[in-house]
Image (cartoon, rainbow, N blue to C red; front, side, top):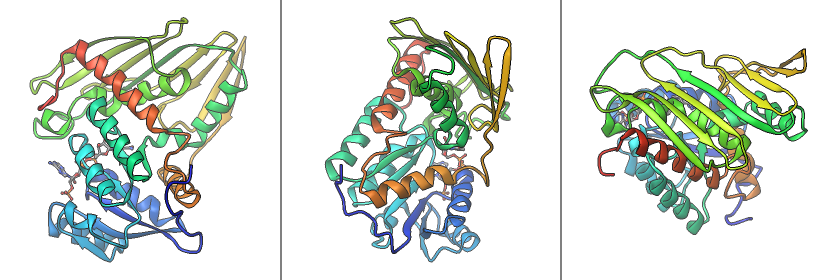
Amino acid sequence: VAVFQPVDAARPVRWGIASTGGIAHDFALALSLLPDAEIVAVASRSAAAAEAFADTHGIRHRHASYEAMAGDDEVDVVYVGTPHSRHCDDALLYLHAGKHVLCEKPLALNHDQAARMAHAARSRGRFLMEAIWSRFLPAYVELRRLVAGGAIGDVRLVEASFGFAAPFDSQHRLFDLSLGGGALLDVGLYPVQLAHMLLGPPDDVRGVAHLGPTGADEQSAVLLHYADGPLAVVLASITTAYACTARVSGTKGAIDLPPRFHCPAFLDLRVGTTTTRLEVPYDRNGLHYEAEEVHRCLRAGDAESVVMPLADSCAIARTLDRAREQIGLRYPGE
Ligand SMILES: NC(=O)c1ccc[n+]([C@@H]2O[C@H](COP(=O)([O-])OP(=O)(O)OC[C@H]3O[C@@H](n4cnc5c(N)ncnc54)[C@H](OP(=O)(O)O)[C@@H]3O)[C@@H](O)[C@H]2O)c1
């Protein structure tokens, strides 16, 4: 549905970057390699960080607050790369100012916030997408094609683990509850989104976790159950390195995603005793595929991506809420 004036093909899509953190640098690098992208602005809590980021990436407008970039008339679309706890407020700030938004994962801390963001985008006719880059990588395009084509029959089980050992730091966004800390939202999201991509929202959610000294889940296990039979097994950790693999098992075969399964370079298709390796590498740092989807939508006047629609993001947020209810994890203000 065309709800806004599409961005003319004759000019670049003009980006603003909100934050100067790790993933914001990676995303700016990805954009700099797209011929029809221009990064016109960066916003930070500090003028010094905005200046340094802008110098590194050759950006003209340096905003010393997130609010200041909302008034920047040259910005079409804002990439929100702040900690989880700010995603909702930051995205609303830019949507209310008439910008389109690509927001880092998780879209929000919880379903209530995600629904408010989706409502703000829809009611203002602005584009909003959660930056789950995996869905746009060649491996995930191929995975969807194989499953839709019946290569493994009906999907009955999705198993995936994502765990890494971060050094404990109570102030870091991974551990600090006020910044949305914990394994489930940071990396558990990837197995959960894989299950949602292939099976949709589950009917039942069961979760157990170990909460560390800050109250954040350092290790979580979540089971998703679908009334017609399928299951998904989700393992997430920020204190222990896991296999970081995934397997999708169906009635006729299975597909293995090697480490790290959220950005694999190949898929192993197993049918009977035959395994076929499908090479599906991505180039550069892989973040340009999601940016290209944003460009495609903005040029077509599409307010949502069909690959990562807001209904999926809200459903994922609901599943994570249900898991957190069971493990007793609440964020400040919830
Ligand atoms: N798609 C992916 O592969 C991927 C990978 C990593 C992270 N992420 C997501 O991206 C988001 C940011 O992660 P990151 O690893 O880039 O984090 P990070 O390196 O800690 O950067 C976060 C940035 O947010 C800004 N910020 C605003 N308010 C803040 C606050 N109260 N405390 C700390 N920083 C604050 C800071 O920039 P200023 O100082 O300029 O304001 C900071 O540099 C997270 O939601 C994460 O889930 C996605």
